[in-house]
Length: 141
Image (tube, rainbow, N blue to C red; front, side):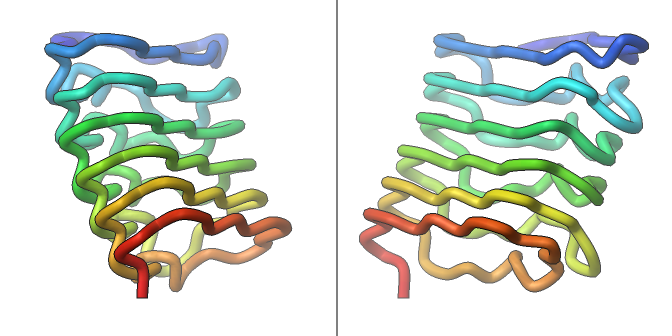
């Protein structure tokens, strides 16, 4: 697990890939405010929580692909403005709950191949949506 990660004063992107032992992002809790770059999480097969991201208020994008144990977007409730959210091939993702329930501006929302995603509950606060893609989410009603 990531144990510490301080504030990014220059706003660089964060890329976490093929970290099979990563379970929690609690070490990212030092990130506060706007992340000028993007956050990309790919093939972190045991990641179960986004809790360390609760103080990030905006980012150019968030991509989460093949986070094997992630069930919800809990931890993203501080986001108020983001250009894009891409969720692809997260086999245990069941809910979008965790996004800011009152107001979040999202330009692009893409949901693909999340086999257990049951509903779009959690998207109620989204505004400014320019593009929505929902494909191959077998359990979605």
